[in-house]
Length: 477
Image (tube, rainbow, N blue to C red; front, side, top):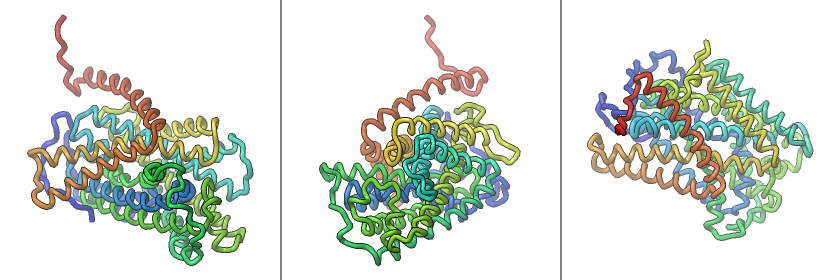
């Protein structure tokens, strides 16, 4: 269970932060339709997408040292889940998760930049998931040497089908999420358990296969490993729709992340032992090769695995499509995102956020496939997503650190040491994966962040005209 912080029930918000909203009795608010099981399923479904079905091939390029890197990333991800649970319990207005934490502690601009970065993460991450999903769709239907137009057409289906499910309503989305989560676990558990009886020691590659130093190998694996854990914050992001969020967000985050971590490590190591290293590196569908090794190349097995990966990808995209709209929704309601993102349908879903985010992801897919295909597209989109999500993670850790060193703190002794350790490790973890993502990804992320600042300038001016914020006092010349 996630560690929590004891705070006064009427803790005052920061001067620039939002006015706290009065919560209803847990379970009494019809808008809060997600219980612990559904919320945990959203976390697991968002973390485990088609990325896990492609990850072993990318990790193999770093060597077997990548398994240790994956283990370290797993610990960091679980600690982030604990951190988000603590912040959700402490921050009065917690709808939007990472955005809400930043705004509560550091003010409007920090909240806006967090929402902007996370919104980029969501649609870029959806594009990355789809780029992996496309590879398994092509394997499922036996499409050989597809053109860029074929790739793009399949990708559009992967993006817009989950969008249509989300537009039907939260309950329908949650039902689909539970079903796809169960289906995706079946083959993964089969590889993680039965697969070990077919593992050959000779298939494992060298400890460091990067061609450089061990440090290079760790950095190569770190970015892909963190991408595989993006989604640990999903329970916090949809806190406004969770029953008793102060209790269930932290629990769902930790339970979902820990279960995903155990499965990731077992599956990745198993696939590395099932498929020869030279055939695994660069293989867009490594799970098909793994099951071929287990069942002596039976064609129906490969098709079944590909089908499972396709269903898994749709489940991940289903959860991420909702999350993509939730942060802009919370920010728009506070006047820190264009007001159109706050538009709700008659089914109480942010339809404009869903449609616009899916449209931007579609444009990114079209641009990506215009230059390359296959794993190259997946890897590029992975690193872009990692850098943009590491920034909100870092700001969240700093928000908790600010509280722990302030006079508002009600945590003492060993609990203070524990909580300080969690937020410091979370912050250092975010810095590390940002550095490991490479200069190109950091450079492109910086450009995307800078684009968001002029938008904030117009939003702030509008709020000043409407009297929602105080106008700066300028010197009279």
